[in-house]
Image 1 (cartoon, rainbow, N blue to C red):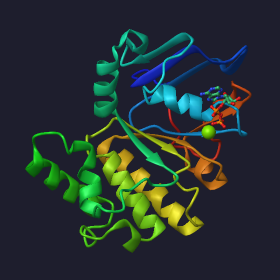
Image 2: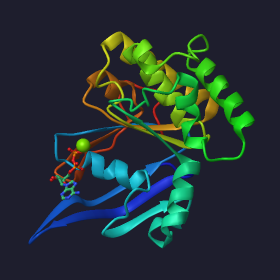
Image 3: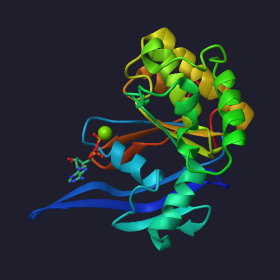
Length: 237
Ligand code: ADP
Ligand code: MG
């Protein structure tokens, strides 16, 4: 577990109540995400992966145990504070990309900052990011003029518009063929090396898990192992 964690969890329990029944989705897990970490979360359907991602994304708080963002208990955050921290710290990437079809690539990347009063800076940053992800020639293309891999690159650029410390990805390669998925992994590597972004990804793809420096294997709400991959000598803390 990294010493200088951006976000860490201790004995984290998450329960959902529906009617008379309580589902214990996470049963007391520990985790820590440090700068530039690459962590893959794997496990069968219903094992708690999305629940964990929601906690890391400050979209939810644990039922018991603590989640700390840079040593502050997130349970003490007001909604406004959680929203602010989420915007400042977290970028989200999804399997379905969720680009807005009526906006160009550049406008999609600008979207999270549309309400900020810095349109010039936002535009420059969006352009730089699209160049960064290899789409400098596609700024004015609409999503349906882009391939799946290109759409995911736009989505990654959008997730980076506020300089997050952590990129949370839910099956980012789930809709991509292997070669395109590999190119997204290469992009993650560059972002970690050059922008110090940590990447936490839920995945069902073995090649993605094999590329991570740690694999969190969730089974029925518990971590079965959280060990460095034996094949990765540069593995995480
Ligand atoms: P995964 O992403 O690994 O498929 P989830 O974290 O989505 O697993 O779900 C873990 C468990 O919690 C499952 O049993 C699921 O049915 C339950 N669960 C998830 N979200 C809710 C919710 N909002 N209300 C009730 N139960 C939920
Ligand atoms: Mg899920």
